[in-house]
Amino acid sequence: MYEYSLASYMTVFHKAIDTSRPDSILVNRLRIIKDRLTQLVYDFTCMGIFERHKLMYSFQMITMIMDGDNVLNKIELDFFLKGNTSLDEVERRKPYAWISDNGWKDMQKLETLGDSWNGLVHSIESSHDAWKDFYDLAAPENNTIPGGFNERLNKFQILLLMRVLRPDRVVNAIKNFIAAQI
Image (tube, rainbow, N blue to C red; front, side, top):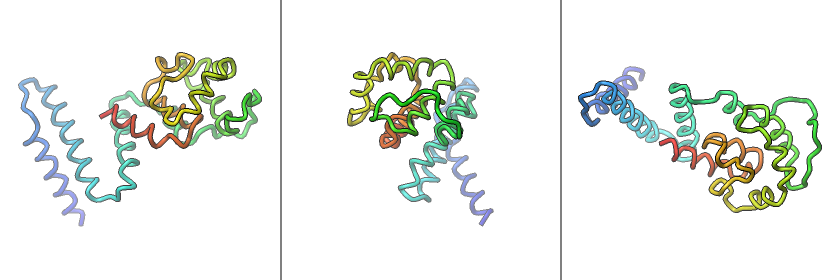
C-alpha cells in the first residue's frame, strides 16, 4: 500500500514539473512548479475524500502554506480553533443582549491578540447601532466592518471576528478566506 501511495505522489510531482509553465529565472520557475504541485496535490487528495471534508482540508492546506511562508499568526489560529480557553470571568459586563456570553468573553481575549484588535470592545460599546446593523446582516462576512476594522483586519482576522460575533457565518467566511488566498 505504501509503495502505491508513494508512486502516486511521485506521478503527481512529475506531472507538476511537466505541466508547469517554463521560466528562465530559477526562482520564478520554482514558484510556478510549487503552485502547480499544490494544485495537483489538492486535486489528487480531493478525489479520495468526502465532499463534506473538502472545506476543512482546504482550510488546513491554506494555513499550512501560510505557515510555511511565515505569514500565519499562530496565536490567532489557536484562538480561531479554540476561542478564549481561560476560566477567568470577564472584566467587563456584556453591554447588549444580542452578543452571546461566549462571544463577549472571546472579544475580551481578541483585544489582547495584537494592535489590529485594539479598541474593538470600546467600538462595539460606543457604536451600538453600527455594530448591531452589522450583526443583523444576512451575510456580514461580505460587508464593511464598522469602526474602521475593515481596513485594519486581514482576511484571516475576519474569520476571528465572525467566530466571536456570528459563529453561524464562519463556514462562509472560511470559503471567502480560501478564495482570497488562492
